[in-house]
Structures are given as structure tokens and as C-alpha cells.
Length: 82
Image (cartoon, rainbow, N blue to C red; front, top):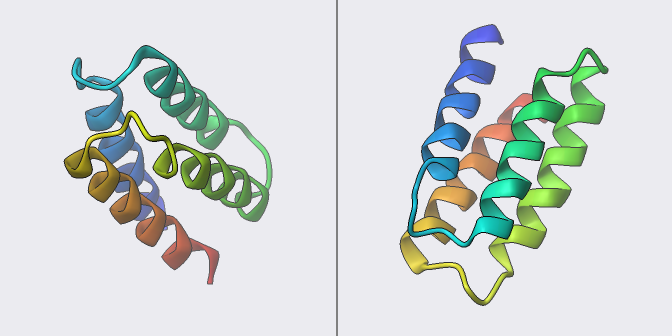
């Protein structure tokens, strides 16, 4: 479980460090990382992150490659949720 969470955090950091992504989206990604690192219950953190990522994936300013990265992260988070 810890390894999977770290894999998700690494993927989020990769997206957040991409300078081609609009600043508001990078800020949202950084907020998701902070939320996942918080001491809340895992299911609450995952639900929150999934909700935020869904909003991000619908952003019209997002490039197709980044949207695919976001969807991959969503899939990884959903596997934690089960």
C-alpha cells in the first residue's frame, strides 16, 4: 500500500513540475499532494484527490498528454480505493 501511494505521489510530482501546465492546475496538483500526505483516513484522501483530479481532467487548457497522465493517476488512486 505504501509503495502504491508513493508511486501516485511521484506521478503527481511529475505533473506538478511540468512547466507547460497552467499555474492554476499545478497549484491544484500540489494541493492534492499535500492532501495525500495529510494524516486523514486513506479513503477520505483518495476521494478528495479523485474529485480534484476529475475537475482538472475537464480543464480545457490541459494538453492531451497531461490529461492522459491525470487519468493514469486516477486509475492508480481507484486501485487504492478498492
